[in-house]
Image: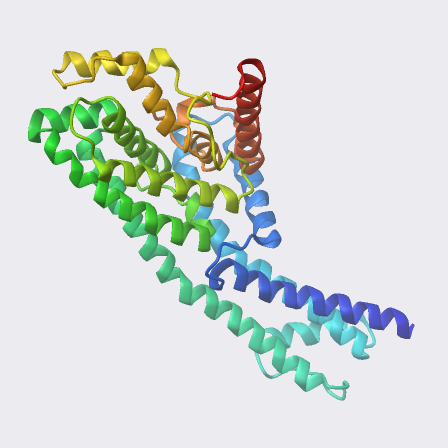
Length: 380
């Protein structure tokens, strides 16, 4: 019997400490640290939403998905407190409570109040105080970091909202380049590269440290931070590769900041990608799709490089750096349709239930296609 109580005491302590460290990993550790408990909560909530949204219209589904991340975030402290409650129930039983009901009652009273009925339990007041302190600490962590999260969310969405003026909704590189050429001239487009380079750097920091932000959706149903990022990167890649104008280092630095950002976020969710791809590796954008944009730009009077084949190779050489992370992250966040990003993979309702697994599968499939191409034709 003593051995059983010792084992229960240890298991209860592990359960309680796991809840505390889960909160610390989720909100306090500045480095992106994956937490299993947080991941399980998000997966379960996705299943719950899937049951409600199965066979619903796209409009209803998109409106409901806006609540997924906030509700899951508010579910986390409930899960953490429940872990504390059960963990300390085991501790109190191991310390000498006559029954599990008595142990649960002691844990319940100690959870949010110092007026516990520990009685003559060995070290009972110490454990009761620690339970109360841990529960208050968990609540304080969440309350303290909610303003931080919403500040980062607001900062992210300000740029996404402003992009609609330049690139339309959903944003496309064709609309952005034509609007700049028509309204302000191509010399003015460089302003967006500095703005979005800073945006990518901030998003990398906040979305790897505060991972629930990745799943927070934009206020408007046809916007998404990840499709906006893809549109800016594709626009910069076209400017750097296709437009007949002097080389713009700011566009190239924006692309580099962008693919580093997306790769780091993909790493946090264990999404595979090639960190050093060959410029000749295949990408999800086809040559026909690129040619259609090239011809549309030419029809609008935008000056283009005459060697289209060389321009395509340069564009693909830029796109290959962020192609897999971009497409996989659109699957992960279940982004609304947008050209050259979330439209690369057909919508599958089951992805609502297993978004992370689907993102990994998509990334793995794209990597396998690249490997197959290299084995047939050799590295470029």
